[in-house]
Image (cartoon, helix red, strand yellow):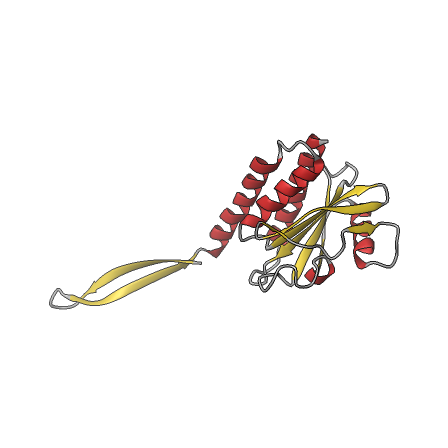
Length: 196
């Protein structure tokens, strides 16, 4: 993203002999504003949900309406299973690769990933989008990568679930992107806890 400023360059006779174009890269500012909008929209949409499923559905919709996260899948933990409560891309419903994940099974990639995330309760992992989204469920805009993070109200609280958020292919996945996904998961955790 850029901003442009045009200024006339006067010629010797006073007429316009050229134009000075000054451009400024505003990518970081524009992306930061978009990320801030994600959190504000998420808080506004999800905190008054009446059920955990409703909180997840509203959260998924809110975080995928902007351009920051191309898709999101939210799993909540009940016993030894993580069950998909919501899956959306660009605000529309989509199909997750797995509707339910057995957290004690060693076979499934998501099972190993979720167990690892639950044991450390913070941070996340970059994974291929194909491991969490059913093939053909979204079309050409689907991102190739996703970032999975545990959902909890705070760092010391037990893990309530997992957020798998798509990562835009045209952006560098950096610390700021990871922190936004982690902050989003905390807000979702609080929404789910309030609904319960």
